[in-house]
Image 1 (cartoon, one colour):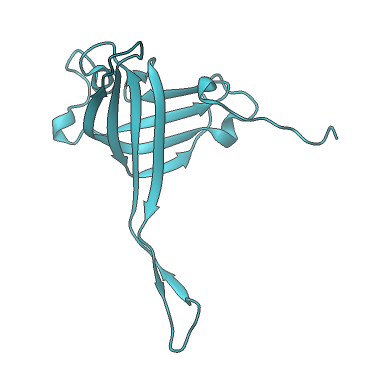
Image 2 (cartoon, one colour):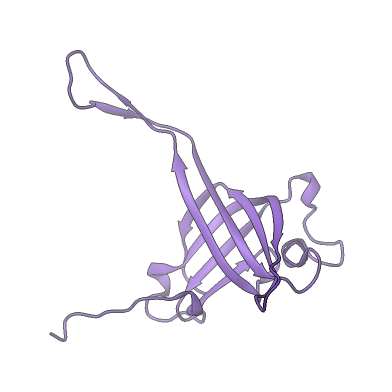
Length: 150
C-alpha cells in the first residue's frame, strides 16, 4: 500500500500574497470561477450539440483579522503612495500557496494565482464576545492560473 500518498492541505498551511506583500493576518479566502457558456440544441435534439463560449469572471472574498483601518489596501497598494493607484485601474494579483511556501514537491501542482484583481467592497464583522474583529474584502479577477513557487 505504499503506492498511495495522501497529502492534503488545511487553511493553516496556506499563505496568501496580494499586490506588494504577504497578507499576514489572512483568516480566509474563498473564490469561484463563473462562466456564462450556453448550450445550443439542434433540430429535434434531446442533448445539446455544442456549447457557445461565454464570459469568465472570478469572484471572491478575503477575510483578514482587523489590525488597522484598511490594512489590506495598504498591503496591496502600498503605504507610501508609490504603489498602485486603486482609483485609476490599479490591478493586483493574489498568489495562493498551498503547503510549503518555499516550494515543496507539490508546489508546481497546487499553487494558484488569481490575476488582475480589484477590490469591489469591504466590511467588518464585530461581535460582543471574545471573537476577533474581521474585515472582509470582496474582489473580482480575470482568471485563476496555476503557478509554481520561486
